[in-house]
Image 1 (cartoon, rainbow, N blue to C red):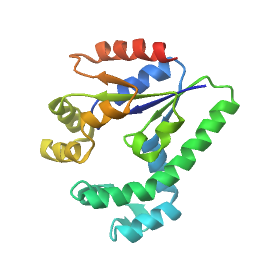
Image 2 (tube, one colour):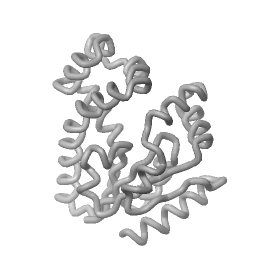
Image 3 (tube, helix red, strand yellow):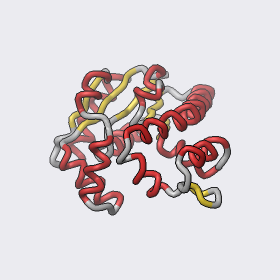
Image 4 (cartoon, one colour):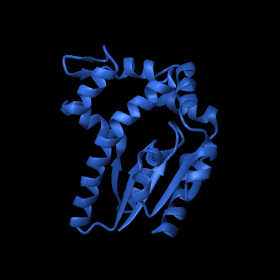
Length: 195
């Protein structure tokens, strides 16, 4: 089975790349979705978040905005969040990979901002980093999430720089394309080569 890991900062274009992979028949594992499912289920991960970040869990519900306000301004808090969540997310991703393999799946894609740091990249046939100019990322984040540009810039600054992805990924897709379809075509070409 070919396992393609996708990583990159918010607003770089991972959603477009994932859409292309889905069209190519890949099973998609979105680690953000896995994380949100784990949060919704409650249990030990949410308990640990509540202990480390008092006040962000109320009546079993995580206040993502309050948590974001803490971790996007405090590098140690972001590291603590990652330490708590990576193990739980890794276990769930491993289960999804095994299920897809058991079904005879041939291509699987894993989308994770922290693909490399979490260790999940080690399970991939190829790791693709997606980068884009900062202002394009700000614009996409604002449009997608309805936040103001200053909040989007804070988020981008809290994430790994392009140089991190260039140093740790097997391939880089630089999303400077003026339209989505041009970037999608660049994705198709690369993914076909990897597969």
